[in-house]
Image (cartoon, rainbow, N blue to C red; front, side, top):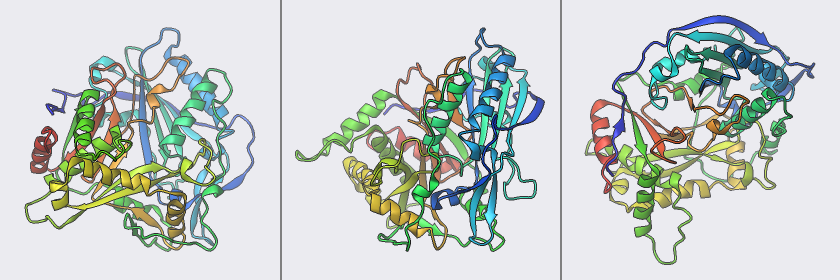
Length: 456
């Protein structure tokens, strides 16, 4: 395909960040003290997600003004989003996590950096130094009982700045986080909420009695310790394995993606629909095959590879859930094939297998997954998880000082997780995608060769 992995010649390893002050932000108005129910999807996502949003300097909005507007908007947004200012609790009688909506507040920090935004270079590359731009969150079930949401505004010497946000995943999925950012931006501009959040998480409660009507090979069972430290099983799945990994970014332009789509169409029968040939499906199929074959040592053709990716289920319920549902409303779709099948299958067959994962996600299937978690917590698990931030649109949020130049999550190197990121708007890659891969050195060499070969 002629694509090459992208690695900057040099990166700044220290952004020379100095914290100026920290405070706690409380809701502007008094909120009702209550306990928020967390669905079975929320229950297994007790870990922190950090994102950073880079903004160019705006002469009409000096750093002090921006910090004040963000803090003021936070105070306002914590009224409709009262659970952000709460604390995670374990109900000892039910053995379930819930949010104590007690208006305890969110963390807010101002910081400065001695470098300019231009000196950082490629914002798409997952620079480990970006971790300096977001406050670290503690385990929310430990005695310090830290906030579920933390903001850090870091000003660069050029006047540009970064907004780092740390949130516990029980608060939002990517879609509801985007709505939250839209509302924060609207309130910062002294406008009404862009969309009214739907905080009724009981909409995703299990049925009574629970009915598991499908097999769920995409889920594994973990028993939660009796003391209620529900995050421990989650950490077992999401913490990186201790091994030496290389980390590279592979970029596919919109033209490259079109080539993959045409490659898929070649294998279609006359009566087959092209609806399955989407950008996500063809890129995922290509990555799945390359990743599986790269890890094959030549004697594992019968070994099964399980691919997982997230599907928004709001519109798949009957009746549909409101688009503004604030909790986690995504489930893991799966595709399974042996290494031999992945080597030999036509490209359109791979695309079809990927598409079948989302097609499987009906109202009944989604409710079966939720009910499956009622008796024991189940975690999605496979040898390859595609975590896609490609189409979430964080960089399209209209703040008073302008849209972000780039928005991305902070990345931990994990062998079984491949991340899809958008490119910077206006770049030469158009509506392309950045693919972040972490593998041992020999597997990375093999993956790169396969990835760059249009016949892989």
